[in-house]
Length: 136
Length: 499
Image 1 (tube, rainbow over the protein chains, first blue to last red):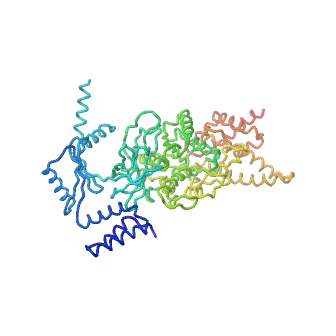
Image 2 (tube, each protein chain N blue to C red):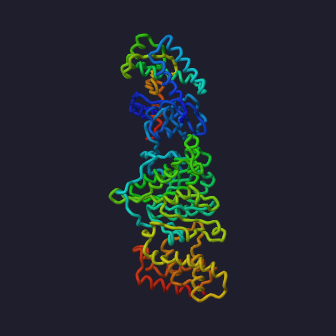
Image 3 (cartoon, rainbow over the protein chains, first blue to last red):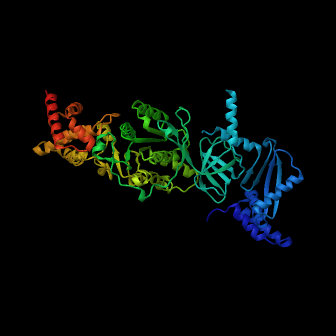
């Protein structure tokens, strides 16, 4: 049998706990932890939780975005970016984290899953540098 | 002046268009021994190029459920865990242009000979499917290697794949270099792929080719012993891509892979690091495909599809003459023949140490010119009979006349096939030598004087049998008139030689 991956365990836990709450949820969670223990995967619980989060996001249509900008954004701008992401990825809701990194100089860098949309000045300058260094 | 520079720069910057695209990225999970495990990169293709933040290029080889195994081309020490990896959407490719002739490049096409950058032309993918059946034509034109033993007995045709196999220090590379040296003026481009060789050996080889003015039509692709295994793995594919660039212009190309045993070892290293299951001799299961897809790209294309050909000389190094090891048997079965080099012959002074008995060329005989076929047709059989008789004659002293004659002829044949390194012999000279040998003109020349006789004969006949030479060079066969002239020249020369 092939090795059990954190993703497999997360899927199993999700199925076992789906739609349960209160008294019926407690034993399912207890069993899940016991399985992690018996499979010697307690050390990987972080990864399992991350996978669980992914599964949950997929089911509920939540999009997690990381938005980095050169300066602080106002609430109005933040809302506009979020609604754009929502439209682009056709999700139900967007959970975003905002970061400020002055070295971007300007523009926005949006990360969703393994996709990046980088319109920061830093990235564009980098591209210009490569373009000028190309041999013609 | 400075205004001019600013103006140019301004124009270039204006030509630059900013476009923001969504890119696929991944994060480095672990890096070790030239391999990176990367998460993300969900839509990546097999053998797609990726870039690391420090500028290194990698190639995706293992596509797993939630990670991608990447081989790093270059220095992996600058890559850290958590680094962002970008997919480029392009399959691994190398820049090719006519400017690459005479240069030494590494496995990704970057020049390493310190002669500046190569003006980029096109890019060619490193992995390409070999030409199909309808585009091919059978081998019917010779590759003149300038080595008598090969051109006479194991002829190679344009588009053929002929393996050079032997132990270490038996002259495998020397044979290949002689073949390159002899391509001067033969309308052939040469690509020499050095895989896992010492840099000192490569330098020596380059100097030798430069001394023979052979670098003008040669490209050297090198993946040195100190470079990563990934470079050794892609070097032959890069080499054949360069060869294909020239073939697509309708040219004939000769490519030498020196050597494929080291290539297989490099691929084994990568495969084991990527945790692919090992098979026989710990090589991965697809090691046959590794070489078959490479050598299948050697071909002769018909005129309808642009013509041109790629002739491949793969080299395999055996351990203590063991040709039944895994890689040698694989490559023997893929190629259209093999040239065996033996340590015993080498130390007996028979150099090139070609074992004529076990060397074969499966398709080359149809490419041999008529004149050569005529003079060398029976040579292989004669030599085989000679070896048998030689073993037999050691028991008895009384031998009949015909056996004695055969033995004497055999000794002279072996002597004629000996040749110095870096001294390729022109085809027409070979024809004259073999003519003199097989027609019995050398039978009364002492064995130790054969070399001297041969050199003298070539010089003399070139002056006194011009018709014969002209006929052989132009029509690939002589007429009675030319033959008469040559016979007379040989007779005259012999008379003066024996005085």
